[in-house]
Image (cartoon, rainbow, N blue to C red; front, side):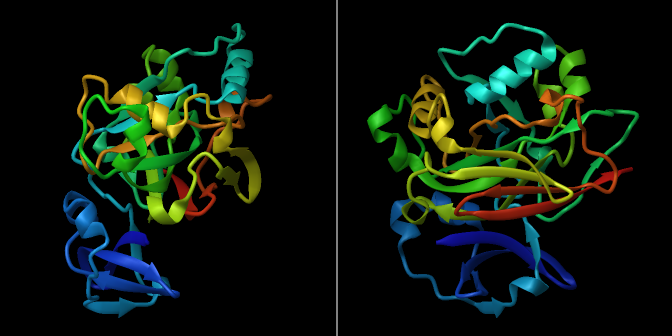
Length: 283
């Protein structure tokens, strides 16, 4: 199943949709309602209340306002670690355990909405395409062998980052948590339809030029390991979101460095999910 959240013209109410056969079937409730219903609800037939043309709706992030911060994984691709080390003039240091940080719920943005920034706040806006994991079954101290049964589905995320803030504050949170700096979507694909999460291409384009192109097969810590590790002593709840890290090709690691500017079009593509297109706006 391919679920989305949308609204229609002249009505800002956010609605749950199922993308099927080229149409959006409107379903009762919200995506969080469906997820919280548990596995039995996920497979229960639901009668649509309306049918919409995908071209006429406004697409929102599938979970527009998460209950908690988005969990994020840093340094999860060797190639990304190598390019960051080169950019900083440091030695390559491959982590032996996952590196975590979070993005505030107010970062979450629609798959086709503007990403805005103020030059008084940041002048180094960077891109990071990532596979997102949506937790479906609450759990703590989850064994690696059981991890995948806790997954509802997958989405695309761009972990947009203010690199100057990241550097100045000596940590990730502030530079990662500016409003709108987490485009998400366009859909959540359920785990049964998505297939192996470790065999998906992840791509970024800026103004049509490819900047990142890698595969989730190159993750240092795959999804089941991340869920096992993150859940140790920390309850993962239904509806929680995990961004699994980005590969090489970010602007900060390029020579010369490149950053997103007013009017740029940022495209984020995760195989099997779809493409987000976000315009960068200097406000």
